[in-house]
Each structure stands twice: as C-alpha cells, then as structure tokens.
Length: 414
Image (cartoon, rainbow, N blue to C red; front, top):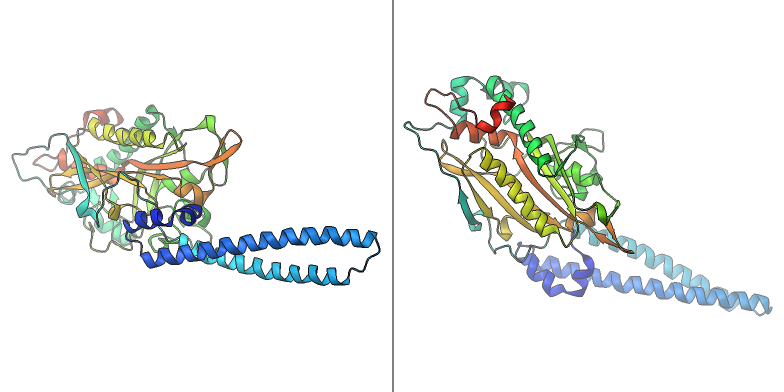
C-alpha cells in the first residue's frame, strides 16, 4: 500500500509516478481530497480533546471551590457529542479512503522504463547459445505424446482443462528439479521453509492479492482460507504484524510449494501444454531486508536465478519490465525468459521483484532501527518454477526419437 503521508505531502510526485502505471488522475485527485479532509477532521478531534481536557480540569476546580458547574457541564457534554460524531465520520472516511488505497498499485522505481505493456519491456541481454538440431524441434506437448509421459487427457478427467498428470521420466524430473533448486538456493544462503498451502485473507491482503485479485484465487468454501497462488504469500506473511531486530536482516527464505491460480484474466494465453496451468509446483525466494540493502538483495536474487539457468545450460534473456507491465505490488521487476525451440519463442521462467515497503505497510512488518521502527523492504522471485523448467529441458534437450537428455547437474538427482 502506498504511503498516505507521502500523498498528502507531495501529491504531484505521487500523481506523476502513478500515472506511469495508468492510474486515473481523477482517482488520485479524489484520493488527495479525501486524505486532506481526514487530516483536517483528525486535527479537529485532537483540538476538541484538548479543550475537553482543559474544561475537565476546570470542572474539578469549580467543584473544589463550590462554584456553579451547570454552564461548564453543558459545554463539556456538547463537546463530547461533537467528538463522537466526528470520530464516527473519521472512521467511515478512513475506511472509504483505505478501500481506494487498496486498489492502487505500488510506485514504480526511477529505473523502470516508461511503457504501456509487455511490448515496451527492454531486453537487457541474451545469455547462452540456442541449441541447433538436424531435425525440426517439437513442442513439449508433442514430445509428451510420443513418450506418453504428459497426460493432459487424464489431467482433465481428474479435474478440468489446464491440469496435467505426469509419469515416468517427466515425473522423476519434476522431483529432481525440486530438490536441485532447493539445494541451490540453500547453498546461496536462503533458509528452507515448509509452509501451508492455504492462507487467510489477512495474509493475502498483506502481499497484495486481496482485495483486487480475488477472482484469480481458489477459495475454500465456508472457510477464511484460499489456496496460495505462490509461496511468496506464506513466506512473507510468516512475519505479519511483527517487529524484527535489525541484526536479523536480511532474512532470505525459500520454499517449494504447489501453487493454484484461476488465471481469470488470461483466457486464450498459453492454454496449450504446461506453460499456464491452474496447479503447478514452484520453488520461491523471498527476502525481508532493510531499506538500505534492498537493491543489493534484488541483484543477488536475480543472479541466483540466472545461475540456476546457467547451470542447466538453458538459453535465456534478461528483461527489464516497463511501468505498464509491472505486477501490482512491484516497484521494479526483472523477468528471465527461457528459449523454447519447439515453439520458437522466449517465455517467462522467473520474475524477480522488489516491492520495497508496499507489502510491509499492508502486512505491518517492521524492524527496530535504534529506538525507531522502520518498515522492511520485501522482495520475491522464482528459482524456479518446476513445470516451465521441465518444458525448457524437454524442448532444448530433445532428440529426434522423442527422448530427452538430462542436464549434467541433474543426473545425480535421478
């Protein structure tokens, strides 16, 4: 959530930043108007309270001196009624203001390029050599048909479209990748966690999925629980409403979980194969750190995901997302897009974001800096999704007969 004090103090900065993210100027003006009105009412309540305190003290003096307190009592009672009415207006106004704030995305970092959508993203560099074949490379779903190890028909029978069942080498490869990614991350300093696959509204609000993206979540009927769309929700909210000692920062966390997404807004996008499923496994990184070190931690997380792709010898490109393509909570994002020769295109395999204090303000995660409490900065990124990595290995390491070679670093896990 953006800082309401900053909005009141420097509206022009906030307006210019959020217009880069296509936030309507009229909405921002409305937000400024409400916030200033509340600031005025809050000051009025404080003034009334100060007057009440003074009159109450005077009332005590009158009683001790046996003076008539009738007029003073009328004034005090009138002030009480005014204060109660104003406090109700203040509470209602704060709720209305917060409902608007909850829908407003994070400020983009100064380094983020202007742009409307993914077509305006900037490719920073391409890494690795694309494989060459003496045959026409196949897409992973065609390879899966040959080996009969990707079963979309039975996945649909068990659930619905965009679910898959895997078996044989592919199922073993998935398990190997989970272990390899977790080992890689822990060697890089990330502490492994096993976390619940369901989260409550408070947790999902903390990381920005609620209330704006409720339609993308699977709700547990009759419970204040949702299936998590990413381990970012669970890992970040381990410290919801906590004050952390500064000497414990940065905290680097990793977890492998199933992830569940309705993908309500992505009809027709990557619906064939394993790229965009309703359920998939992913190894996630989360960092909780100080404001001064978050840029360095961001670079460390990008490097870690790059190092994993390098170790698998998968060709990929590093992409700087523009303002129009940033996720709701992100201030800055680097995507890693892996080359898929069977589909002749790059596709996202990792997205690393610095949310700065946006999530921390919602989740009330702070750290003690001397006598003062500061909001932490939170970061997240995949390292890596299991299904999309399987796809990348299948397409880049395929043979003419439909078999696939196994990257050297994974062979000991198989």
